[in-house]
Image (cartoon, rainbow, N blue to C red; front, top):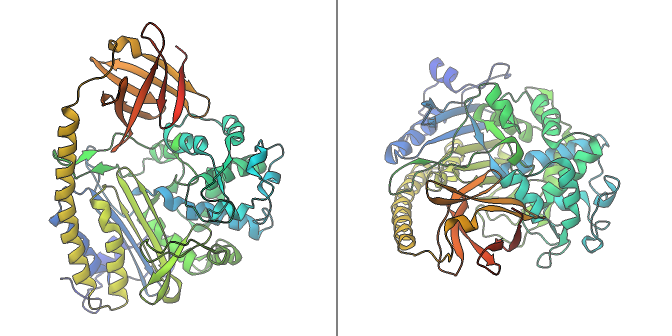
Length: 507
């Protein structure tokens, strides 16, 4: 159990440790800060393999920001309030806000059809782009899909502006979720920013910097990994802790080319305070109007029905970059983000004037505590007597899940180790470059007698699979998939298939 909000101390040392960056107006220490500090520290003692957390709590009565655990084990970096964490799909809230900010200044019409945003956009006729509005892309109701664009900008990094523009021609209608029906996807945001990049003559990364980060005074938030590294920021590295061998770093790391408008920001806990203040005060930060109030209100008010209340907080609606549901009797806005080694929870309750951001650089087990940490913070601020008990139960459940997951990983590895190769030819026969017009170039290579598969920023050692002329890869960490070779006469591969697409051999 942890002290409730009436019993925490407000010492100067604690205040300075948790205070946001210089320049924040009217800093006051959150009364529940000590209880949150004790609870998260306790969780890390209970599960020492978990890497770290960043926590930001904003209310009109006080603020709290702190890092816990380690940001980068190999570099010996402890997490602090300025550590920048990859926030994955929580980026959508920022992209939508930037678009709403443009709309508030009549630079963009959210009701405009997307085929008129940038001259000559090569949408195919079947996409019916003249019927799809900007807001449809932002609310996941556009009825469109474009897997090639989303894969390239999120994972492989094999793209440039002209290629992405041409790939708009591969946009197609989603038969399972036609125009007007909600279906969560990255595609709408990525299609939109290909268009706005051309329309504005400015990349979406720079648009967010201008419209939000600079205006709100966010000093450790960016869509450019190169900027963070060049400036010497403290960066959280992703880890997996539910492995038989213990905590291991995630090999896949984000670079500029894989930071997408649907999931491509890093942000610190201190900056999350500014973001939460902006959201809860109609665009004001430190008493100054950073973003038009109309823009902030529009991101809350342009709602669609999701038809799905199974998510946390029973999110029956989606607005511009926000899920909308219920936390007990309060309406809550939230957007989570997930990527191998990372998990983010960002939420706010307008009626209570409070919001919470929690970042984790551990997955998947450590990630399970992001929402319970947020729930603890809300419970303590609202004086809910069961807050600490509920959090203790979440820790206990997380430990059970960790043991079960470790056992599943070991069993899966043992099963895969028993497989035998089904490739009919020596390794050398399969080496080469294979190309898909939609998804890019895949390289099959050999290192120290083992086959490896590479597509842009993704790389995986190959393992045996059960089907003829096939192998298993984890190009996306902890997500196995199968590559099958298409053999020509004479036993030489002429193509391969991966994830439903054909890659012709070109060398």
